[in-house]
Every structure is written in C-alpha cells, then in structure tokens.
Amino acid sequence: MNKRFKIILLQLLTPIVAILFAIALSSVLIVAIGKNPIEVYQTMIEFSLGSADSVGEILFNATPLIFSGLAVALSFKMGLFNIGVEGQYFIGAFFAAFVGFTLSGIPAFIHLPLAILAAMLGGVLWAFVPIYLKVRRGVHEVISTIMLNYIAYSLIHYFIADLFMDRNQKVPEGLGSPLIRTPHFAETALMPKLHGFLSFFGIDLPNSVYLNWFFVIGLLLTVGMYYLLWHTPFGYEIRAVGSNPKASEAAGINPNKVYFKGFLLSGAIAGLIGLSHLLSFYGYMDLDFPKNFGFNGIAVALMGNNNPFGIVLAALLFGFLNRGAEGVQTFMGVPMETIVIMQGIIILSVVVAANILGRYIKRLEKKEA
Image (cartoon, one colour):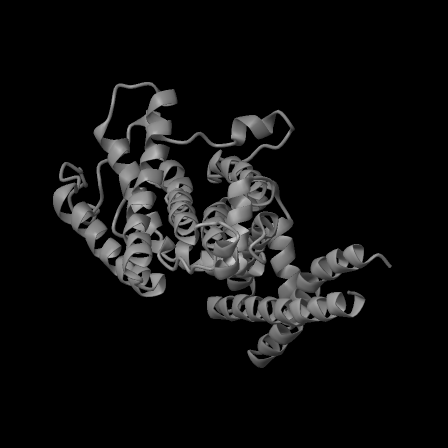
C-alpha cells in the first residue's frame, strides 16, 4: 500500500475508532445510572436527526464552535496557546452590539458589515495586549490571556449594567423586572435567517429555528483558512514556526512577526464567535449572554486535529451531542451531566488516539526512510 495513502487512511480512521471507543466507555456510564445504552443512543439519534428543524438546531449550535475552533487552531498552528479566545469573543460581541444599538437609519448592506467588522476589531484589540507582551516582554500568553478573560467579563458587565443599560424597557406591572441588557439593535444590523434560501430546495424550517447566514460564513472561513495555511507563504511560515521556531528563524523567518500577525488574525476570528446568537437570536446583549464558546473551541480544535475541515466536523459532533442531550434528558430522564461527561470522554479518546497515531506514523516514516 502506498505510504501516503496509508497515512491518510490512518488519519481518517483514528477519530472514528476513538469515537467508537468513547461510545463504549460512555455505555458503562449509562448502565451505571440505570439506563439502556442502546435506547439512549437511539433516542439521541432519532431526536437529533429525525426532522429538518432539529438538524437546523444542530447547525445553529455548531456555528459559534466553528469560529472558536478556527481561532484556537490558528494559534495552535504557531505553537501558541490562545486561551483568551473567550475574552476576545466577549469584547467582539460587545463591539458589534454597540454598532447595532447606536447606529440607525443606514441601510442593512452597510450596517450589518459594520457590526461584523466592529466585532473583528474588538477581538483584534483584545488579542493585541497578550501578543504584545509575549513578543516584547516575553510574558507567556497563557497567563496573560487567562487574566484578560476575567477582565473582559467584568468590563462587559460594567458596560451593560452601568453605561449602556436600556432603562426605557416597559414591563407590565407585576410581571417581573426589566432585563439588564443593552437597547435592542436596529433591524438593519440583524443577520437574516437561512429559511428563504433553504425553501428553494424544499426545506421549510419553522421560525423557532435561528439557523442563519453566519453558518455559511463559517464554512467559507474554513475554506479560506485551509487555503491560507497550506497554499500561501504566510501559512507556510505559520506551520514552520509552529514546528520549530529556531529552525525557521535560521531559515530566514522572523517568528515574532509571525506570532504577531497570526495572533491578531486569531483574535479577529474570535470576535465573530458570538455573532450568530447576538445578531440573529437575541437582538441585544445582556448579562446572561452565552459563555464558554471560547473554551469549548479548545476542545473542538483538539478534536479536529487543528485541521479546518476537521474542526467543522468536530463542531457538528458537539452540536449533535448538545441537541441529542435535550432529547434524552426530556424523554429518558438522562441527566445533562452524563452528556457532558460523554463529550469529555470523546475528547480524551481522540487526543490520546491522535498522539498514538502520530508516534506510529513517525516510526513508519523512519522505517521506510
């Protein structure tokens, strides 16, 4: 068998075998809580894939994870750990929100791109601090980005609760209190859903599904990132620095320049993570805006082996598990925590399997050299 073909085949089979192994381990857990694993998996699959609107929910749930996985993977490719994707996406979301509720009276083809660009700018600004400290002062990016995540949370809470809270909300007397949120965005800043486009293909989604064009943008960005990494000089520099910074420096590449540009690009992508929810589902930003998309992106990037297309598959798997969790929780009384543990087992299995495969491939290459 051709060596290259054998390596590709092994790389394709590894995540499949790892997932099957994780399913077997998870089955033990399911039996331990008194449930039948086959019934649980069957319910999960039927609930998740049994209708077009459920599949739409999976794609909607996967959208922010595609962006976060790509942002994390880009820094991994350089040999850096951008743990600050969480903070960068929060700041980016607020920048987009600010453009959404402060501007009005401009057409959608200007307003919406402005909101998207503002989100990317917010992510870049929040990524600038740790990479500047890394390149100029040698501060490890893990420490600085973790600290900046907490600062981002606090800063956004201050902005929403004190500076920009919508104090003109009208709540009927006796029906609770106003939300701590920004004003609603102008209609021109909202991202249209995919419903009209999909109806051309005979797929009719209910209005309760918020699948929107950010999913398509995520797929296009995936293709763009693959092209950047494997078909451009800058992509070559990123991979070279990530493999061996000293050797790449000896070959004439400036690692600090690559770190700087690559990290800011990672921050720009991170700024897009929350937009699918912000500009399609909520239409405002409040104190309960979803967290942890940035941290989940680390798991998605690891599962996807830092390959853009692998990241899309990993994000879809996470979307499927989250949707399936709702089904087994509702119809079979399986605790949500069981699904979270299952996700952890899958991630561990894939990472361990990838590590074993990597060593085997190196031995294979040495033997045939």
